[in-house]
Image 1 (cartoon, rainbow, N blue to C red):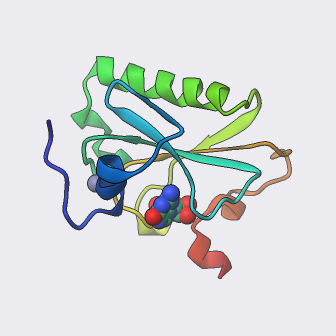
Image 2 (cartoon, rainbow, N blue to C red):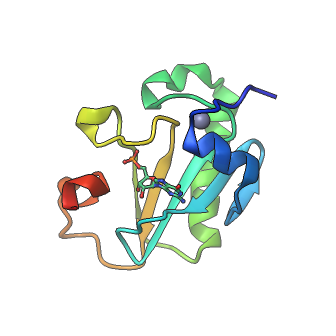
Length: 123
Ligand code: 5GP
Ligand code: ZN
């Protein structure tokens, strides 16, 4: 089992939180500050800082992670949705444990990328 980071909020959620879906080393949680009618985050249980380090997952894990994203969307009742990864502070990343946003339940066709960027930008 990989070591959780004590200072990482998502490692804490992996350890103690409640999930909307869980399988094969991945968990899905509701975003605390939803920016769509359905806004779920998918994260690997093991700590990886960001999408930049995607190479730290082997081919099998990467496939499972993507399948888990699709399964999670289905599980929360979405057929049409957007999948988004913010990478680095300049890309809107605010929590430095890799996660995939699943946003749906509305019509995203007119959204611009900034509309799904970090909550801080809207505050
Ligand atoms: P990022 O900006 O890094 O791409 O996304 C981080 C996301 O995590 C944000 O959408 C934010 O609302 C969410 N978030 C931050 N802290 C918590 C938390 O303690 N619990 C949950 N469920 N979501 C969180
Ligand atoms: Zn972490």
